[in-house]
Image (tube, rainbow, N blue to C red; front, top):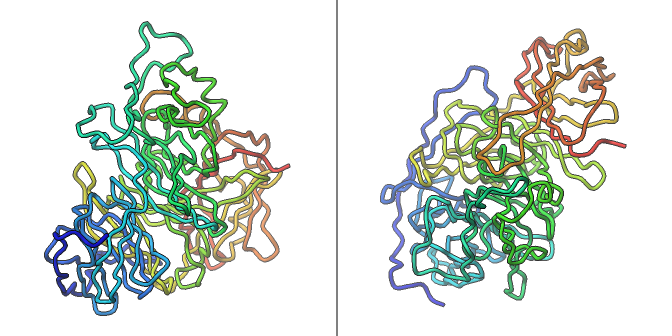
Length: 503
C-alpha cells in the first residue's frame, strides 16, 4: 500500500543546540532538553534509533520525524498516523513498525530519500470502542520473530462511541445486591477484543491474546534473552504500579480482560470471586512503591552494556509519567521466578514529568526520554540523560540470598559505617488486591537487620534478615553508609519484591 495522498514532503528543520537544565551539585548525570521541530507541537510519544544512527520520534498528533543527533536537524519522515505511541526499528534500513491506536503499521522509506513512501498494515486484530483510555504500547520482538503489543482497558467514565470495531462485550455492572466474596465494582473494562491483554502477532500475520489481566500496560520490552516485561499503572485492581513478567496464558490480575482469556472466554468479571482471581493471578515481578517510586510507570529500556552510561551494565530503566523521575531495576531469577529490586535513578535534576518512552543512543552514552501530555495536562518534548564520566557511590544491585540480602556497591565501602546493622532501616509491607482504586501500604512491619558483613573487596555487604516471607515488598532506607573515600551514599531507597525465597 502506498502512502496516503495527505503525506506531504518532509520539512528540514534546524533543531538548534540543546538547553542544559540546572544541575544538582555533584550529579553523575546531566539532563539536557532537546529542542523539537519548529512546525509541530512537541508531543513526543515514542523514540527509537534507526539503522542510520538517527533518532526517530513519533508525535502524538500523527507525525514521525528523524533527528540527526550530530547536526541537530529534524526532518519529517511520515505522517497521517492515529496517535502513534510506539516505534520499533524494522529489519531493513528505513523501515519501522509503528504502534498507532488502530493498528500496527510498517512504515518504510523504499527509495532512500529520507521520507516514508510505504505504509502497510501488519495487524489490526483488536477492537476499538472510541474510548479515550484505549492506549497501546510496543511493539517488541521475541527471538522467534513474533511481535507483541500491550492494550489498555477502556475507562468506566466513558461509553463506547460508534463506529465500534470488534465484538462488543456486556459492560460489567455492579452486582445487585452485592454478594460477599464476589467482584462488585468495575472501574475500567474491556468492551472489545483484546483490551487489557498483551497480544502476540505471529510471523504469518495471525494474532492472539498472549496474556491478560492488565489495566493500562503503558510499557513493554523484551529482555536480551527474549522474556517479555510489561509495566502497568496503579488504579482499580492495581494496588501500586507493577512490572510484570509476561508468560503465555498468564492472568495478571485485572479481571476485565477475562472475556478474552483462553480459560475464561465469555466470563463476566462481576461474577468472579476475588479469592479465586487471587489464586489464579501471576504476581508482579517488581512492585514500585506508590509515590515513593511509581505513579504511572511507562516505557522501558535496557542499558546496552557498553560502559558508556556508568556502572549499571545491562540493567532495566523505567520511565515514570506522573513524576519527574526515571527508575532503575535490578532483576533476579530465583528458580523459575523473576523478581528483584527497584531504585530511583534520576529524580528532578532538570528532568520533566510525563516521561513515556525511552531509547539508548547507539554509543550507549545517553538515554533519550520522550515526554507526552497524553490526556491531562503535563509537560512534553524530548530530553536526554548523559553520563558525566563520574561514578556516584550507589547501591548497584540488591540480591536475595538464603538468609537476607546482598548489596553490591559501585565503589568500595567504608567498613565502619557499612558494617553497622543500624545503618540499614528496613520495613516490609504489601498492597491489597481488590477492586478499589489503588491501595495503601498494609501490614507495615519493621524488619530487623541483625548483621551486616562487608566482603573482602569491600564492594558488597551481606545483610542478615531473619524470617523472610514470600509475597511481601522489602523496603530498604540506608542511612550513614559511606564509601571508603567518605562519600555519601546516593541511594535513598531500594525496594525488593520477594515472590520466592532462595532454597
